[in-house]
Length: 252
Image 1: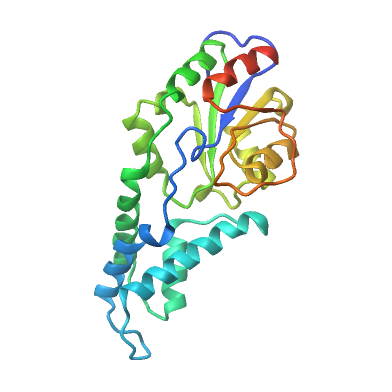
Image 2 (image 1 turned 30 degrees about the vertical axis):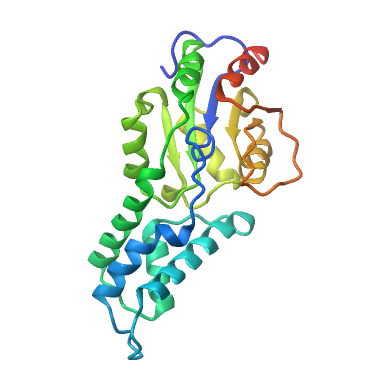
């Protein structure tokens, strides 16, 4: 059975966003994260088919632009994608036929650049434990183009993986938040509880609060000053993760 003891009261599951919610927000420039990947691609393909020299700086700029376009899709068709998709799109944009092995290695360089910036909230474990002790199923739904293994590595490093019953990554789905199918996938992963008895916790008013409420979940906002505003009313607002526990108790 998911969670700990027998379920008490009206909340059966709590599903968390990852970045900005369980993990602290990493205020980094996308272009900086792409620097190593760009150098690798440029070194393997120094000349474009047109004959022009392929500079690492231009590759980095294109990679960053393609990723920005990927995230902009949350406000349009909400189609999901993978890190490989971004690399292939950028290679196509540059007019370079980049071999799969080169793209894979470039992807690893990109992920390695993120590693020092991934830090989980030190209060996450205690909050998850308190919810589990109440018999509540715990899930996670993250908008991401990163592979599952990359996320899992950090959750395991910080002893959080065993506290989250089901982890859903949109890189493995056709759609990302706020699309209802992403939230339905998370509900399925935690045992298909009634959405009205499920709480979603996130830092993005549009992706998280609007998306969760559109499928009938309660939505708790953990405000993030780096995130664009959106006119939606959450069921509650918290500054720190432990504040969630008495909220859930009050809804039980």
